[in-house]
Amino acid sequence: MSEYGAPPHTIVHISDTHFLAGQRPLHGAIDTDATLTRALAQLEESGIRPEALVFTGDIADLGEEDAYRRIRGIVEPAAARLGARVLWVMGNHDDRARVRTELLDEQPLTDPVVASIMLGGLRIIALDTTVPGYHHGELSEEQLRWLCAELEHAAPEGTLLALHHPPIPTTLPLMPILELQRQHELAAVIEGTDVRAILGGHLHYSTTSMFAGIPVSVAAATCYTMDVAGPRGALRGLGGGQSFSIVDVYDDRVVHSIIPIGDYPIVTSFDHDFVARVDALPAPERLEAFSRQVPPISS
Image 1 (cartoon, rainbow, N blue to C red):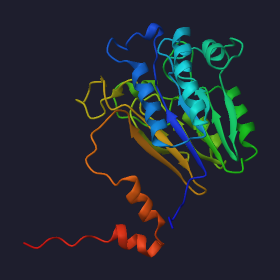
Image 2: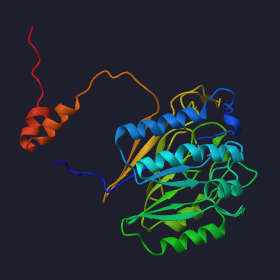
Image 3: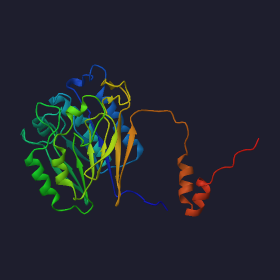
Image 4: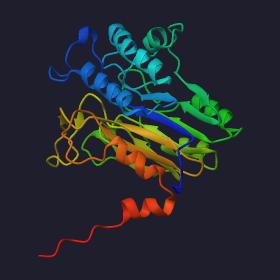
Protein backbone atom coordinates (compact mmCIF):
# COMPACT_ATOMS: atom_id res chain seq x y z
CA MET A 1 0.00 0.00 0.00
CA SER A 2 1.06 3.59 -0.62
CA GLU A 3 2.13 5.64 2.39
CA TYR A 4 -0.46 8.27 1.53
CA GLY A 5 -3.15 6.95 -0.80
CA ALA A 6 -5.27 9.20 -3.00
CA PRO A 7 -5.53 12.87 -1.96
CA PRO A 8 -8.92 13.88 -0.54
CA HIS A 9 -8.86 17.03 -2.69
CA THR A 10 -7.25 17.97 -6.00
CA ILE A 11 -7.24 21.53 -7.35
CA VAL A 12 -5.74 22.98 -10.52
CA HIS A 13 -3.89 26.28 -10.10
CA ILE A 14 -3.59 28.44 -13.23
CA SER A 15 -2.32 32.01 -13.41
CA ASP A 16 -1.65 35.02 -15.62
CA THR A 17 -3.51 34.15 -18.80
CA HIS A 18 -3.41 37.81 -20.00
CA PHE A 19 -6.05 37.57 -22.73
CA LEU A 20 -6.51 40.49 -25.15
CA ALA A 21 -9.68 41.43 -27.04
CA GLY A 22 -10.04 40.11 -30.57
CA GLN A 23 -7.58 37.28 -29.83
CA ARG A 24 -4.72 39.70 -30.47
CA PRO A 25 -1.33 38.09 -29.71
CA LEU A 26 0.16 39.31 -26.45
CA HIS A 27 3.20 41.51 -27.13
CA GLY A 28 2.61 40.64 -30.79
CA ALA A 29 3.99 37.14 -30.21
CA ILE A 30 2.00 34.99 -27.74
CA ASP A 31 -1.21 33.17 -28.66
CA THR A 32 -2.71 33.22 -25.16
CA ASP A 33 -5.78 31.25 -26.24
CA ALA A 34 -3.71 28.38 -27.64
CA THR A 35 -1.58 27.81 -24.53
CA LEU A 36 -4.55 27.86 -22.17
CA THR A 37 -6.57 25.60 -24.47
CA ARG A 38 -3.63 23.19 -24.62
CA ALA A 39 -3.28 23.23 -20.82
CA LEU A 40 -6.94 22.35 -20.34
CA ALA A 41 -6.73 19.64 -23.03
CA GLN A 42 -3.72 18.09 -21.23
CA LEU A 43 -5.69 18.11 -18.03
CA GLU A 44 -8.66 16.38 -19.63
CA GLU A 45 -6.43 13.81 -21.34
CA SER A 46 -4.67 13.03 -18.06
CA GLY A 47 -7.76 11.63 -16.37
CA ILE A 48 -7.20 13.93 -13.38
CA ARG A 49 -10.54 15.28 -12.20
CA PRO A 50 -10.01 18.32 -9.97
CA GLU A 51 -12.72 19.81 -7.80
CA ALA A 52 -11.80 23.35 -8.80
CA LEU A 53 -9.84 25.42 -11.29
CA VAL A 54 -8.34 28.41 -9.47
CA PHE A 55 -7.12 31.30 -11.65
CA THR A 56 -4.90 33.61 -9.58
CA GLY A 57 -5.30 36.83 -11.50
CA ASP A 58 -4.31 38.79 -14.59
CA ILE A 59 -7.02 36.94 -16.43
CA ALA A 60 -7.13 39.72 -19.03
CA ASP A 61 -4.21 41.95 -20.00
CA LEU A 62 -6.15 45.19 -20.44
CA GLY A 63 -9.41 44.36 -18.69
CA GLU A 64 -11.35 44.21 -21.97
CA GLU A 65 -14.85 42.75 -22.14
CA ASP A 66 -14.10 40.47 -25.09
CA ALA A 67 -11.04 39.05 -23.33
CA TYR A 68 -13.14 37.94 -20.36
CA ARG A 69 -15.91 36.58 -22.55
CA ARG A 70 -13.45 34.58 -24.63
CA ILE A 71 -11.63 33.03 -21.69
CA ARG A 72 -14.94 32.17 -20.07
CA GLY A 73 -15.98 30.47 -23.30
CA ILE A 74 -12.83 28.32 -23.15
CA VAL A 75 -12.73 27.58 -19.43
CA GLU A 76 -16.34 26.92 -18.47
CA PRO A 77 -17.00 24.09 -20.99
CA ALA A 78 -13.74 22.41 -19.96
CA ALA A 79 -14.61 22.83 -16.28
CA ALA A 80 -18.03 21.28 -16.91
CA ARG A 81 -16.45 18.26 -18.59
CA LEU A 82 -14.02 17.92 -15.67
CA GLY A 83 -16.76 18.37 -13.09
CA ALA A 84 -14.82 21.28 -11.56
CA ARG A 85 -15.82 24.64 -10.13
CA VAL A 86 -14.06 27.78 -11.36
CA LEU A 87 -12.67 30.41 -8.98
CA TRP A 88 -11.57 33.69 -10.58
CA VAL A 89 -9.12 35.84 -8.59
CA MET A 90 -8.39 39.50 -9.38
CA GLY A 91 -4.98 40.55 -10.74
CA ASN A 92 -3.45 43.97 -11.31
CA HIS A 93 -4.23 43.84 -15.05
CA ASP A 94 -7.88 43.03 -14.38
CA ASP A 95 -10.89 45.34 -14.13
CA ARG A 96 -13.12 44.76 -11.10
CA ALA A 97 -16.36 45.85 -12.76
CA ARG A 98 -15.77 43.73 -15.85
CA VAL A 99 -14.67 40.69 -13.86
CA ARG A 100 -17.99 40.97 -12.05
CA THR A 101 -20.15 41.43 -15.15
CA GLU A 102 -18.35 39.11 -17.58
CA LEU A 103 -17.14 36.30 -15.30
CA LEU A 104 -19.34 36.39 -12.19
CA ASP A 105 -22.68 37.59 -13.63
CA GLU A 106 -22.84 40.32 -10.99
CA GLN A 107 -23.44 44.06 -11.02
CA PRO A 108 -20.45 46.20 -12.17
CA LEU A 109 -19.31 47.26 -8.70
CA THR A 110 -15.73 48.40 -8.15
CA ASP A 111 -15.09 47.27 -4.59
CA PRO A 112 -12.64 44.36 -4.03
CA VAL A 113 -13.66 41.02 -5.53
CA VAL A 114 -13.46 38.42 -2.76
CA ALA A 115 -14.94 34.96 -2.29
CA SER A 116 -15.05 32.09 0.17
CA ILE A 117 -16.08 28.68 -1.15
CA MET A 118 -16.22 25.19 0.31
CA LEU A 119 -15.09 21.98 -1.37
CA GLY A 120 -16.51 19.53 1.11
CA GLY A 121 -14.62 20.41 4.29
CA LEU A 122 -11.88 22.37 2.50
CA ARG A 123 -12.27 26.15 2.25
CA ILE A 124 -10.72 28.34 -0.45
CA ILE A 125 -10.68 32.09 0.12
CA ALA A 126 -9.97 34.44 -2.80
CA LEU A 127 -8.51 37.83 -1.90
CA ASP A 128 -8.23 40.94 -4.06
CA THR A 129 -4.73 42.44 -3.73
CA THR A 130 -5.18 44.90 -6.62
CA VAL A 131 -4.81 48.66 -6.44
CA PRO A 132 -6.79 50.28 -9.30
CA GLY A 133 -4.42 52.17 -11.60
CA TYR A 134 -1.28 50.49 -10.22
CA HIS A 135 0.56 47.18 -10.60
CA HIS A 136 1.70 46.68 -7.00
CA GLY A 137 -0.50 44.96 -4.43
CA GLU A 138 -2.21 45.99 -1.21
CA LEU A 139 -4.89 44.69 1.14
CA SER A 140 -7.23 47.28 2.63
CA GLU A 141 -8.10 47.33 6.32
CA GLU A 142 -11.69 46.47 5.39
CA GLN A 143 -10.60 43.39 3.43
CA LEU A 144 -8.29 42.26 6.24
CA ARG A 145 -11.18 42.59 8.71
CA TRP A 146 -13.36 40.51 6.38
CA LEU A 147 -10.62 37.86 6.16
CA CYS A 148 -10.22 37.84 9.93
CA ALA A 149 -13.96 37.27 10.35
CA GLU A 150 -13.88 34.41 7.81
CA LEU A 151 -11.01 32.71 9.62
CA GLU A 152 -12.58 32.99 13.08
CA HIS A 153 -14.23 29.64 12.45
CA ALA A 154 -11.89 26.94 11.17
CA ALA A 155 -12.95 24.80 8.23
CA PRO A 156 -13.07 21.03 8.88
CA GLU A 157 -10.18 20.39 6.44
CA GLY A 158 -8.47 23.76 6.63
CA THR A 159 -8.22 26.75 4.31
CA LEU A 160 -6.28 27.69 1.18
CA LEU A 161 -5.76 31.38 0.35
CA ALA A 162 -5.71 32.43 -3.31
CA LEU A 163 -4.37 35.86 -4.25
CA HIS A 164 -2.47 37.47 -7.11
CA HIS A 165 0.52 39.17 -5.43
CA PRO A 166 2.38 36.45 -3.49
CA PRO A 167 3.86 37.54 -0.13
CA ILE A 168 7.36 36.26 -0.91
CA PRO A 169 10.65 37.77 -2.15
CA THR A 170 11.71 37.87 -5.81
CA THR A 171 15.28 38.41 -7.03
CA LEU A 172 14.21 39.78 -10.42
CA PRO A 173 15.02 43.47 -11.03
CA LEU A 174 12.14 45.95 -10.69
CA MET A 175 9.65 43.27 -9.59
CA PRO A 176 10.06 44.07 -5.86
CA ILE A 177 8.48 47.47 -6.65
CA LEU A 178 5.33 45.59 -7.68
CA GLU A 179 5.10 43.25 -4.69
CA LEU A 180 2.39 43.09 -2.04
CA GLN A 181 2.79 46.06 0.31
CA ARG A 182 2.56 45.88 4.14
CA GLN A 183 2.77 42.11 4.21
CA HIS A 184 3.04 42.13 8.00
CA GLU A 185 -0.65 43.07 8.17
CA LEU A 186 -1.65 39.91 6.30
CA ALA A 187 0.72 37.85 8.44
CA ALA A 188 -0.91 39.14 11.62
CA VAL A 189 -4.33 37.98 10.37
CA ILE A 190 -3.40 34.47 9.20
CA GLU A 191 -0.82 33.39 11.79
CA GLY A 192 -2.26 30.67 14.00
CA THR A 193 -5.33 30.11 11.78
CA ASP A 194 -6.30 27.06 9.72
CA VAL A 195 -4.67 28.44 6.53
CA ARG A 196 -2.63 25.54 5.11
CA ALA A 197 -1.28 27.01 1.87
CA ILE A 198 -1.24 30.21 -0.16
CA LEU A 199 -1.65 30.15 -3.96
CA GLY A 200 -0.29 33.11 -5.92
CA GLY A 201 0.61 34.37 -9.37
CA HIS A 202 1.99 37.69 -10.69
CA LEU A 203 5.65 36.65 -10.98
CA HIS A 204 5.33 34.65 -14.25
CA TYR A 205 7.55 31.86 -12.95
CA SER A 206 6.96 28.92 -10.64
CA THR A 207 8.42 29.28 -7.17
CA THR A 208 7.76 28.33 -3.56
CA SER A 209 8.46 29.86 -0.18
CA MET A 210 7.03 30.33 3.30
CA PHE A 211 5.01 33.20 4.76
CA ALA A 212 3.88 33.45 8.38
CA GLY A 213 4.78 29.77 8.71
CA ILE A 214 2.54 28.82 5.76
CA PRO A 215 3.77 27.35 2.44
CA VAL A 216 3.35 29.61 -0.61
CA SER A 217 3.17 28.24 -4.15
CA VAL A 218 3.30 30.52 -7.20
CA ALA A 219 2.04 29.19 -10.52
CA ALA A 220 3.88 30.35 -13.64
CA ALA A 221 1.91 32.10 -16.36
CA THR A 222 0.20 30.40 -19.28
CA CYS A 223 1.10 33.41 -21.50
CA TYR A 224 4.86 34.04 -21.14
CA THR A 225 7.40 33.39 -18.38
CA MET A 226 10.10 35.53 -16.81
CA ASP A 227 13.75 34.69 -17.48
CA VAL A 228 14.82 34.08 -13.88
CA ALA A 229 18.30 32.88 -14.95
CA GLY A 230 18.78 35.63 -17.53
CA PRO A 231 21.45 38.33 -17.53
CA ARG A 232 21.63 40.13 -14.21
CA GLY A 233 20.15 43.60 -14.26
CA ALA A 234 17.72 42.88 -17.10
CA LEU A 235 14.06 41.94 -16.93
CA ARG A 236 12.71 39.95 -19.86
CA GLY A 237 9.86 37.60 -20.67
CA LEU A 238 10.19 34.40 -22.68
CA GLY A 239 7.79 32.70 -25.07
CA GLY A 240 8.28 29.32 -23.40
CA GLY A 241 8.25 27.47 -20.11
CA GLN A 242 4.52 27.98 -19.57
CA SER A 243 2.93 25.71 -16.98
CA PHE A 244 0.15 25.21 -14.48
CA SER A 245 0.07 23.42 -11.12
CA ILE A 246 -1.77 20.49 -9.63
CA VAL A 247 -2.52 20.99 -5.93
CA ASP A 248 -3.16 17.76 -4.02
CA VAL A 249 -4.52 18.35 -0.53
CA TYR A 250 -3.91 15.51 1.92
CA ASP A 251 -4.97 15.32 5.56
CA ASP A 252 -1.55 16.43 6.80
CA ARG A 253 0.11 18.16 3.82
CA VAL A 254 -0.41 19.97 0.52
CA VAL A 255 1.57 18.88 -2.56
CA HIS A 256 2.12 21.25 -5.51
CA SER A 257 3.18 19.71 -8.85
CA ILE A 258 4.23 21.80 -11.87
CA ILE A 259 2.85 20.65 -15.23
CA PRO A 260 4.65 21.99 -18.37
CA ILE A 261 2.28 22.96 -21.19
CA GLY A 262 3.01 21.37 -24.57
CA ASP A 263 3.63 18.16 -26.48
CA TYR A 264 6.92 16.42 -25.76
CA PRO A 265 8.44 13.19 -27.09
CA ILE A 266 7.97 10.08 -24.95
CA VAL A 267 11.40 8.63 -24.21
CA THR A 268 10.37 5.86 -21.80
CA SER A 269 7.08 4.46 -20.55
CA PHE A 270 5.23 1.59 -18.88
CA ASP A 271 1.94 0.83 -20.62
CA HIS A 272 -1.46 0.51 -18.97
CA ASP A 273 -1.36 -3.30 -18.92
CA PHE A 274 1.99 -3.37 -17.10
CA VAL A 275 0.85 -0.79 -14.54
CA ALA A 276 -2.39 -2.70 -13.92
CA ARG A 277 -0.52 -6.00 -13.45
CA VAL A 278 1.88 -4.49 -10.91
CA ASP A 279 -0.92 -2.68 -9.05
CA ALA A 280 -2.84 -5.95 -8.76
CA LEU A 281 0.02 -7.70 -6.94
CA PRO A 282 0.23 -7.96 -3.13
CA ALA A 283 2.52 -5.30 -1.63
CA PRO A 284 5.65 -7.49 -1.14
CA GLU A 285 5.36 -8.79 -4.71
CA ARG A 286 5.02 -5.24 -6.04
CA LEU A 287 8.37 -4.39 -4.46
CA GLU A 288 9.96 -7.40 -6.13
CA ALA A 289 8.32 -6.68 -9.50
CA PHE A 290 9.12 -2.99 -9.72
CA SER A 291 11.55 -1.92 -6.99
CA ARG A 292 14.25 -4.59 -7.28
CA GLN A 293 17.17 -3.42 -9.39
CA VAL A 294 18.20 -5.48 -12.38
CA PRO A 295 21.83 -6.64 -11.93
CA PRO A 296 24.16 -5.06 -14.48
CA ILE A 297 25.36 -7.29 -17.31
CA SER A 298 29.00 -8.20 -16.71
CA SER A 299 31.39 -7.75 -19.59
